[in-house]
Image (cartoon, rainbow, N blue to C red; front, side, top):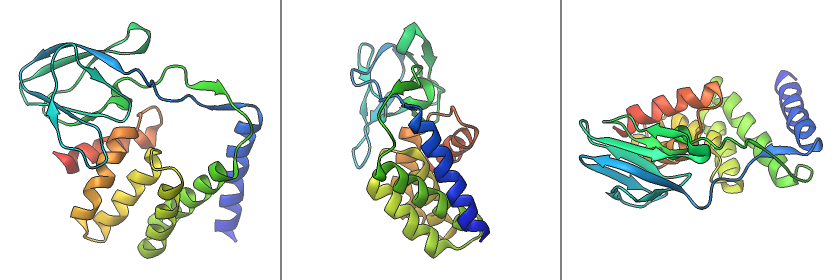
Length: 200
């Protein structure tokens, strides 16, 4: 009964936000200019891609992972002329350094796909918290199938796989988590930290 009530409230909250015409803005399709690189810096665009060198003048996009060497420096010009100095020695998702500042845009009502994603993701999250790992894995995979570029389900799936001692299977989900998490929500900031630890 508690689970049903929690899911209902979660869906209602998501629905009430959308009915008002609010939704997260789309990612910056043009990308952000790299204005300084000193030392070895690599970038990848998950899923499944390899790291490639990044140089001054290059472009990084939402969803990319930037990985400067320990002593390297890299500076990115983000939206609104905001500067992001990428932390050295750890992988960082562009979303965390250049979060979309125009967070709210007008959009139609919440779709069935949006609602299903939210329900599957929240159910999987609750099952993870209750250590019901097999059920969590099923629900999170359903959420990922609906919206593979949403960070939350990817981050949660990585945690499920780690708890199941399937660390190699968790790595692509940690990459997706790091690539798409913005850090604007407290739980995403924590997931970014976990992803950096696992991917180092």
